[in-house]
Image 1 (cartoon, helix red, strand yellow):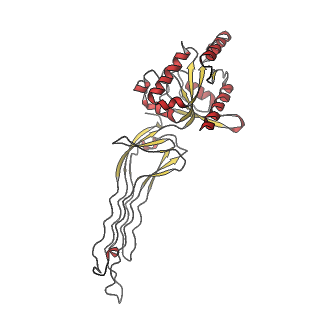
Image 2 (cartoon, one colour):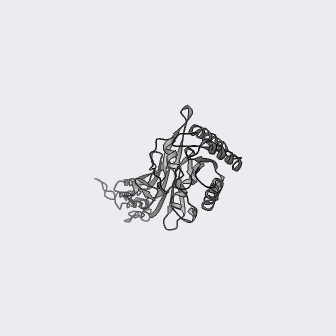
Image 3 (cartoon, rainbow, N blue to C red):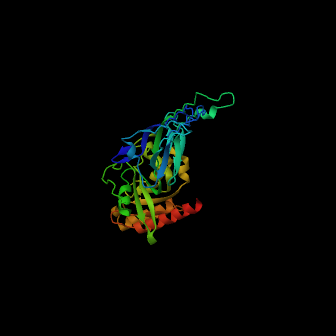
Length: 338
C-alpha cells in the first residue's frame, strides 16, 4: 500500500557474489627451476546484509531500486596470494521490517533492533589454489578449485510500524485530527471517509521531557479482517503497537456496539491483539452540550467500568492533557507487565 513517500510492502531480487577461482601456478624464481605449486585461494563473494536503521520509517527507497547484486570475489594469484573478498552490500531497513520468502511466503526473520545485522544472501566461497593439493605423489598439481557460485533469492519486505500507541477506529472518527492536535504531524484531514490512506506517526510530548510515539492507522470497517476497505494493508501495523486507543465519535448511535465491532475485527485478524492494553476515548465532544456530556460520561462509566476511558475534543482541546495522563498510565502498566 503506497501513497506519497510511504511504502510498506516491496519485493526485492537479490544475488550474492560468486567466489573467486583458486590459482593454478608453479613457483618460478632465479636458481629455482622447480619451485612447486604456489597458487593462492580465491576470495569470498560479497554477502547481502539487512541492517536495522531507527532513522527510517518507510520502504520508499526500494520503490525504484529492487535489484541488488553483490561483488564477486577476486581470483587467487601466485605466491599463495589470496584474492580479495567481494564487497558486501548493506541494505538499511526501518525497525519493524518483516522479511518473507516470496515463493513460499514463509517468514525468514524480523528486524526490530538498532544496527541489527542479518545476512540475507551469503556470498559463494572462494576456490582453493593448487598448493593445497600437493602431496608426495603429486608434487605439481595443475588444477585448482573454481569458486562456489553465489545465491539468488526473491524476498518480500513488509513494514509493521513500531509505535507506543495505535489509534483504532472507524473512518472519520477523528484519528488524524487527534494526532495533529497532540503531535507535530500533519496528516491529511477532511470530512469524508478514508481520508487517511497510509499510516502516520507522531511524537507526543509529555511532562518532564518524556514522550511516546503515536500511530494513526487508516479506518477500520466491518469486514476489514476479510479484506474489506483497506483490509490487511493496514491491520498489520496494529500488531507492533504497545497500547491500542479505540476512538469512537460522539455522534455514533451506539458506543458499546461500535467498540465491540472494532474488537471483533481485530480478533478475526489476529486474536493476540486482544491481549494488548487498551483505552477507549469518545471523540468530537465539542458537538455536545454540557447536559449531553454528562449523559455520555455516565454511559461510558456503565459500559466500561473496568477500562480506562475519557472524553475529548481535538478541535477545542478539551481533556487532551487528561488523555495524555491516562495514556501514560496505561503505557507504564504495559511496560511493567512486559
